[in-house]
Figure 1: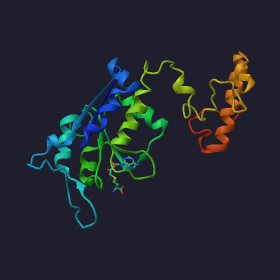
Figure 2 (figure 1 turned 90 degrees about the vertical axis):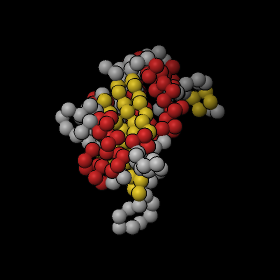
Figure 3 (figure 1 turned 135 degrees about the vertical axis):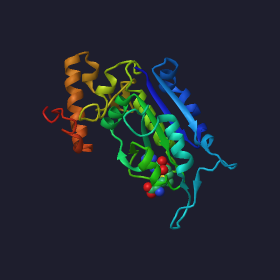
Figure 4 (figure 1 turned 30 degrees about the vertical axis):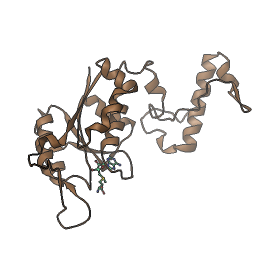
Length: 238
Ligand code: SAM
């Protein structure tokens, strides 16, 4: 089933190269994913095509106004409720931090509208009245939701069956289970005196699998012990 993503932004041009490049571009060309980018200003009704205003209570910057955001979201996704055409996700540093499990959950929705904030953020009433959930890329503040939206799109598209050449890739990669992926090597076998581990050149697939698992476990223990056991697989035994 095709993954259908819509994006609402005041900077649609930011998505142009991204959507046509590498496997996001290929997935779209092959009909595995569709991405429509909408310019929020098309819903603005004043002659300046305004989307923001000064904050009540004072303070720096501007806030994105309920008009035209709510009508735009409702036009693209329908009103909040069980018959909504897609799940509406606002990108926000205050949202649920995105991880691989979160991406898989969003991917299962199949139809999404990603709402990109700008300026000092979005009027709370938009979030209350028209948005289903807020998602964060991490504990830092960017200037807009466009790069987070691209990260979500890229993460979702690679989960669509048929997009990755080898369907196992997504499972054996970092966060596919409870582990980071271990070290990887390609040619040359000796680079500045650092040699590729002998086992990887042995042709013994069982030994390679055991080595990779042990390396992945060691790396996860060293770098991200919080991951162990998180996704329910028993990765602590080795
Ligand atoms: N005033 C807001 C706050 O303190 O929480 C930050 C607003 S930020 C400058 C403008 C927009 O960038 C946000 O509305 C959001 O869409 C996007 N953004 C910034 N950082 C983000 C992050 N870590 N994850 C997702 N979106 C982010």
